[in-house]
Image 1: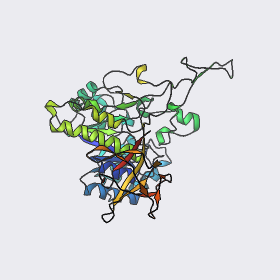
Image 2: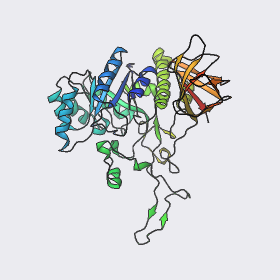
Image 3: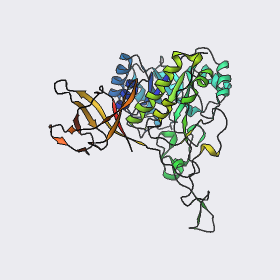
Length: 408
């Protein structure tokens, strides 16, 4: 069994990029300010991309840049100019989906490594072989593929071509993300990075000759979220993913919070490391799944990996997330003279609260907030102000970049 595993994390902005690396990602994927399928993420400027690649390479991590939109004619000159600006930046690979974009990158950046986006909906070995002939070094499989499909496809590919697949995060109701609903309903094109996620909206039936009479599709007074998929979660299935030939485990979520990135990356990092330490006798530890559930999520599914999804993989009642924990602070420093930990507040918490603290490669532990002080040294009973700087004395002082969370 090939036990090479890359944990690939989303980096919607620089803070999330740094968090992903700190909490154990081997690589990150990010978008620039143009031509990314997540235009609503913070994304990175040219200068930030230069900084990010230096940051990553200093820590022996990789950075992949998404240029995976399907451009129109008017986008080509802008994209050409954009690629000129990226010359000289040591980006490890570009994630692409459009044949024209592939040819343009080859022309402008001939030494660039190319990874084929899931947006290209590769579902069979013939298609994968075609893309390999075009110089693609890694196939990001369509989410509609099963593990047995992926394993068979891998046997037809050149030895040096890698397989990347999503293992965690939101699922799209449209075929490999090719959605027209957003464009049709609100004029924002999903294939240009501006999806409004109409799959998460509530729908009802309306009969043409009975205007104003709405019929729930399910017998429920709240209506029906008929397009609302559960979130993918494969943390239990690391041996099966590896057996299928997947070498890059991809986490979805460039639009998600820094807390989400830290929590999910830390959980998968711990589970992967446990597997790698003794793959032959590996048994999944459910504590990693419990940690994962402390990030915002919908109910989970295994997608198409073992069988085609059924109604059990949809959530017809609500599109709300499960949020059992609040991200309340992040450790920014420690004052050796006073013994105070410096914490930046992210959500309100108060004296008397029981807080869970976790960090990179560290299991969580609990502390009760017995007292805290503001930046001026004044004792306060609660921290209600966003990004307020606090001084707290803990029984077990956490390290920089450790996260504080509170059960709701």
